[in-house]
Length: 366
Image (cartoon, rainbow, N blue to C red; front, side, top):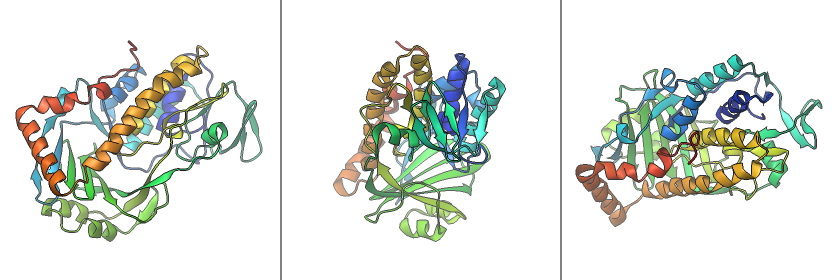
């Protein structure tokens, strides 16, 4: 298992639960996660529960999602997440990593840190220090810059979406609600974490290219400047930011083939996902379950056939949200009126649009 993040640990656990001998190779010196928040929706929590984990032990149960007008500071609608048919939780990444890591260790699966994979070989992998390790199957859970993906597909050409994002955590009291603050050309998503802090993701359309990845430190003043003119409540939240990371949002083509019989990819290594549907970690959890189930029966083609169409649909929905959150002019007015009406007249109808996403359980295939 190349990579000890969410995808790699979940996949190691699913294989281990099925009796496979697994080793996790993580290039970092320790299994840690210094990122911010993420949302685990019912489809992702179904996998965690099937693995014998208790997600709410590490996460915070979400109550609702609320679109807000970032300029006026008025709530547009409220949609009750208790109606989505499963658990919808807010996590700090470190807490989810910890939940998976503890389970992997309890299963007896070895985790080798400082194990940077340089290349995939015909018999396994070669580490950066020259050591070779043999394996029947090499699983690439090594993220955006995946060595395993490069082995399978060669280089690809990610393209800049014209949007940049900032991540931050702030001290701010907040009910267990995800708020989407929408304004022309920019938006902010806020939701609380179990430790009481508020997770903040701010996105703005920009023409300038920004290096891919989200570990680039930025000046908090840059966020406040990018969102000048927003409502006082949102401005107050942004004013509390003391440390912030900035990253450019890129799209990668989803490859036609995810394996070659001896190596396979999942999660961001297979299909990097823009953060506009909160599905990156959830799709990785789904991938992990399906990959282990099919690979143990020698059916890597079945894994790819089951996962690729669903991933493409989720990516298309995320891309649509990227546009809808940033509308301006008449289109924005129409969208706000539509959301307000839907929230008042038929709030359940809004959430039912996502039944195909949240209601899908890979642990109980039809």
